[in-house]
Length: 184
Image (cartoon, rainbow, N blue to C red):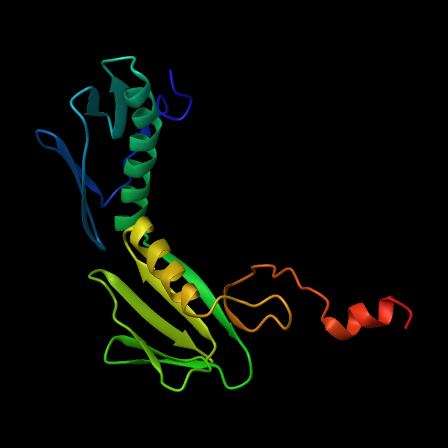
C-alpha cells in the first residue's frame, strides 16, 4: 500500500467534491478543477474525507495511487486558497510591468518580452522587479513561472537574469580571478 495514497484527504468547508464516472470535480470559492482517473482506482467520498483505493496491484496503478491522492489534495487547496510563485529580476535596467493582464518584461533584449497568461493565471508586479504568478492549478502556476524564468535564466558570473525568490545562484569566479591564482 502506498504510504501517501492510503492517507485520506480532508474536505474543508466551502469546498465541494463531486465524483462522476471517471472524473473527480472539486469546486470552491476560487473556482473549479477536474481530474480524470483510471478505472483501476476507486475513490470514495465519506464523512468529509476523500479515500483513494486501488483495485489492481500492477506497477502503473501503484504509482498512480499516491500521485492521484496528491493531485486531489492540490486541487482542494487550489480552489480554497490558490497557489503562487514569486520571481525576481536581477540586473541593471531589468524591470517588469502588467499591461492589460499581460506581463511585459524588459530584460536586456532590444525589445520587451510580452507573456500572455493562460486561462486561470494572473500576474502581479511589485517594485518593478518582483513578479508573482498566481492561480488555482498548481501545475499550471509552476509551468508558467518556469517558462518566464527561461526567458533569461540567471547567469553564474554576475547572477543577472530571472530567478525564483530565494533561489541560490552558484557563482563562478571570472577570468581575472583565475589568472591571479596562477601566480603570474
